[in-house]
Image (cartoon, rainbow, N blue to C red; front, side, top):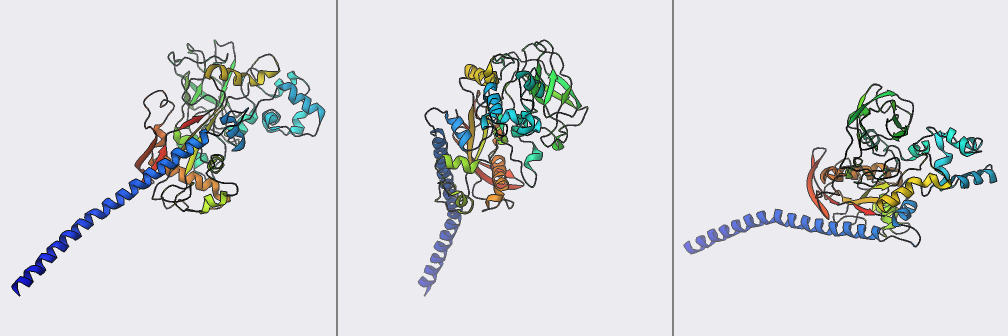
Length: 439
């Protein structure tokens, strides 16, 4: 009897030890499983990047092909002025081609309204002020602002303006003469004051640069409510004169900044831009171009959360692609010849070796979704759903750490980053690939 009691005690001790060990192992098993899901998701992200990089067709660069097929914004080509005028004279009611759209939609007017004044080169220059420089008003209507302002992102219905960079991400821009700026000789910072709010652009006269007008768009706003911001323009390296007569409005015509606001202005460096400012709104189209989503499977991407699906991460949540397109604007500065509209395209080819590029990064929101994010949705909610997933990814993975300086220095990460972070007070584990360029 005594031996039996001792045996029972021993059994109880062993069972207690086993229970303690199991209790210690369970979190470890969960961690190991989560780690395995993270590695599998990273492999899917890398596979999508490789697939997008392999998209090509004879006679077209990969970036231009994706720009056209995935609807990434910008203008496919800048038709010579002669071709635009010939088309107008041949058919009074003809609609413009995609290559001509930036010309005929200027100042918000319709093609029929504009055709009446399209009789000569001089008429066109008069119709598209300022004559000395800048871009067509339609360029701002279709791609302005170049950076996503908070007001556009945070609305109940997100804006759908495709982000477009006028110079390659992380590279110095071009001067007015088409040569590349020297970032080792930065111009002194100047301060500009907003004096009126009438145009969809910033405009300032700079002394010492052949009296050209420099026109640009504001970079990322730094205060909520768009009360302040900054402007980057490209000028001569020894430019020190102040910028005057700035003006800016949002694309809907409302004031972008208050009159009298002082704005810092810089010159010659790379345009400020970080990975968090890229857009996720062409995710479905880019996944289709990568062969991840088959023809007619767009609906399944929105509703099928099986971890085995290639458009999902290993936890069963959708993969998201943030992108930005580089393409120089149509040139209207004083140049001779019918092809002067494509002058900056040609200058970028000469200076950078390419005149457009797609920058993209693939990410996953991880195993836990914030309560505000929909697991499935309909096509009507694409913009909201994709934006909300991207919000969590960019916050959890600290996408803002990859800036215009990351390409020339030690990058914040290489390959795919798996990172714990905070999103609206919740702990999130997100996965984000480093941005890659397709030219």
